[in-house]
Image 1 (tube, rainbow, N blue to C red):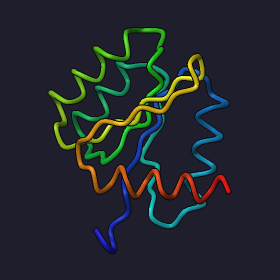
Image 2: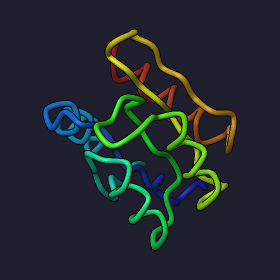
Image 3: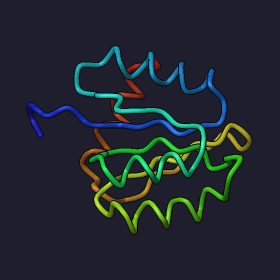
Image 4: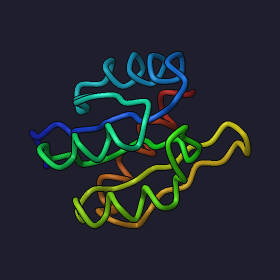
Length: 114
């Protein structure tokens, strides 16, 4: 993973959130923002044909429940890590899949916020 970029997609129904995360992540050399989507359906279509390391996922989407979407994502792409974010409760939840990438991602986010 030393020279590889971490492929990330952003899933949120608020375009301003997507754009803010995209700008923040693009400023880091280890991340590749492979796409952004506003619905669960678009996300599932994308991961069926593309390899994604981490999905930043709003747990409240217009076309479905975030928990159910997580289950569907893991069926299609079991090696993908999920970081679920909701502004409603101000929490960041990360699955324990591919722990190394999630830990690196969280460390970078913490450093970027200083």
